Length: 324
Image (tube, rainbow, N blue to C red; front, side, top):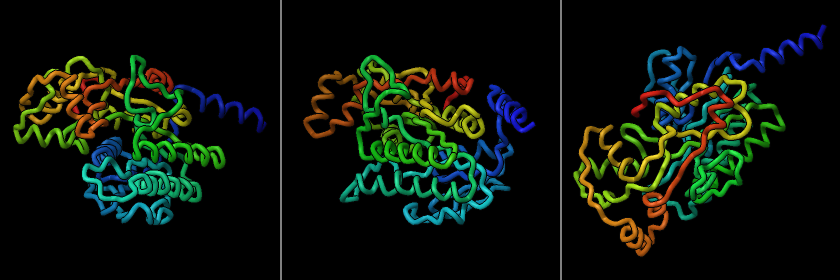
């Protein structure tokens, strides 16, 4: 009986241990900090992986490597043939030396428009699921005693975060219209060996042995996510039936002070930080006087991530003993 069969299938799909087959997985941004780690993890899980980046990435044996060129003009249809799931890590990230005249337009072109073009092409190619690596910046820049949650009103605070939020909204509309399963993950800063962005600049300063005026910043609380933790969540979200829907927030679950972040980065790279205990109020005033308001907020403020709902929905916890 068709109705009986439908009921049986729904019960199986709803079972907390059921997982759909992973199939053939496309990882975009496979040359990047996160994308490269995702590719390594999926290969270790014996998945069939296609790794794509602006230039063809160096990949392990058995992985197909593709060059996308400029994300704004990428031929997504050509790379989606035979793909079951997309893990979209490619993005225009925080640019340390910005050259674009209209930064918001540039972030939108890559992080919003290219993402939605990929999603529409995925629908046409019969892709089952798209995992989108967004940003906790969609929630906001700081927390004030209450961690960020997935169901709160977004307050994106930068061109990067605005473009990510607009991409999330576009993906949600495509999912509703077409049935494409969209999983959105919002990580904070990702910590590991040889990170990018502001953490990469901090590692460079540590390697040069520079004095850092961060020794007194011991009371603020900032959640980061280890590269291993983020990759583990992505691997889980690829085939977990409960992953699509509300955004998945993630962190290591242990907020660190700014000083502790520096010390952890230094330990990961076998370095000894040279920290000067400049009072937080004095440091903040100095940064704001030179127009570095965002940096002052990052160094002095709190950013806590509530991920209890992520853990509950996916029956998942961050890997124990993560160090990178």
